[in-house]
Amino acid sequence: MSTSLFDLTDKVAFVTGGNGGIGFSIAKALGQAGAKIIVGGRNSSKTDKATKALVGLGISAIAIDIDVTQEESTNKAFVEISRNFEQLDILVNNAGIAIRKMPQEYTIEEWNSVINTNLTGAHLCCQNAYQIMVKAGGGKIINIGSMTSIFGSDWVSAYAASKGGIVQLTKSLAIAWADKNIQINSILPGWIHTELTETYKTNRPKRYREIKQRIPQGRWGEPNEMAGAAIFLSSHASDYVTGTSIIVDGGYSIN
Ligand SMILES: NC(=O)c1ccc[n+]([C@@H]2O[C@H](COP(=O)([O-])OP(=O)(O)OC[C@H]3O[C@@H](n4cnc5c(N)ncnc54)[C@H](OP(=O)(O)O)[C@@H]3O)[C@@H](O)[C@H]2O)c1
Image (cartoon, rainbow, N blue to C red; front, side, top):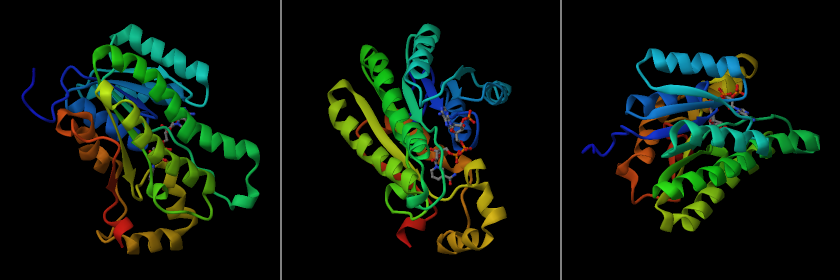
């Protein structure tokens, strides 16, 4: 057994939405810390490409198709995980979408798709992971929240509701599963350059600059800057940390 607090050798980690952006960076970080990685995504070719990239870095990784909005697809993915590994030590609920418009303009389908992806999807993955983790005597779950876990937002109300919910889900599961040695925590990223936010720079340059000006560190973040928090919350270093959120935002939320 490893003596390093942060070593993830022999651990198995599943990252939903691990095929791009923040999810890929977390998958890479956990893999480089020693974990075997399962990359989950809806878009098979994108997931395969990301998995090959991890393997190219010397990381043990496999791809799994999952649509977290579909209970059947989610259950199937976890059956496949059990079949391949018979263990799951780390689950990262990272899959997420945003629909940007004023609250009065949402159709019910749009509202549901955001809540189902960001919140209900995380709940379904947690339920599935619980079954596997309990048998192994414990595990780690990381839920990806957002600045809107803390703040309201006029034009992403569904997203903000889902990300506020992520923090409360995290706390609730942390209490419920503490005696099973499962630690559940959240990471709340600030403003990070990914596909999800790329239109800010091109379509809303004024807003992009305003956000940047509010960040004490003076710049938007990069996906790989979630790595440290993800490794900490996946490793023995966080064994007495549960139900909390780590903010990784260059200081945006304190300014
Ligand atoms: N970028 C930021 O500034 C920022 C800030 C705070 C929080 N976050 C959060 O960080 C997480 C990752 O976002 P990102 O910025 O890296 O954006 P991204 O590059 O758009 O990644 C989103 C990921 O979610 C996956 N996904 C979406 N719907 C899914 C579904 N129904 N089932 C399975 N996978 C699904 C996508 O996979 P496919 O392509 O295969 O669909 C993709 O890998 C999200 O939860 C987001 O809310 C981002």
